[in-house]
Image 1 (cartoon, one colour):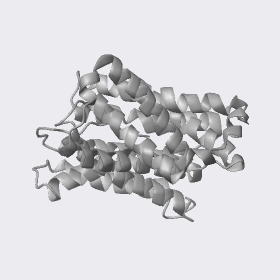
Image 2: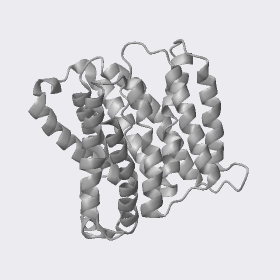
Image 3: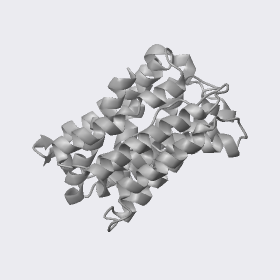
Image 4: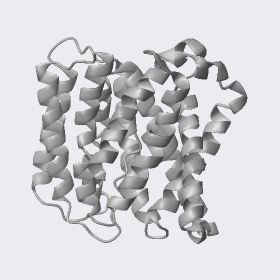
Length: 302
């Protein structure tokens, strides 16, 4: 289930980039695509929750503040910054920057929460930084778009916040209803930032790489959001969160392959080696944590 969800998320990167390419001419930007995705995902997950666990949707007043921050940071700002990053960078590179989030969580656990960690945390940190240096090719002309790099780094920081807040959220409610309400918050925020009255409806009739944009948008909502989230939630019944997060790192690997095939975004040898270092470093850092109760759900919203 985790591998399938990672593959769906990976394809979603290329699909989203195709939508953004078509939208560049019709007036759709990253916040509008984020709003479209969040609204569709909220509607779909709401139906699932009402069918399976309607009572779990009940909200306590004490939960509202956490849900607002959780939904804003993890379900609106993270995907929006990710969409900005993939519009400026190859999909695989954008994901590598975002996937340093588990490493940031491990560092926060050590210094912010004073949790014990294994020494390999520092090896993981060093490998990830070296890997990012290779991906950015800092010894050359630094050809990576600075806006894309900043967006990818910002997505990583906010994704780490999402993980930390998620640990609190799942201690109060089940992951499915938590994800549903978080997408709901994202949908409301998106509708304020980019009102639906400004949505370029005509774009849905266009094509991108020969594929209808409306069909691409359906993928973003159904197969790029609802289905992989439900699969990961189901996987958490059988695997610990840390294992889910590590197995989920197939996403940037598959995403790079899909983007190479569909978009011609080939990475050179140094960048490929850097990607391996980043993923190895994140794995070491994530497994360096000595897990306690209430581990955050590893559901990267990309």
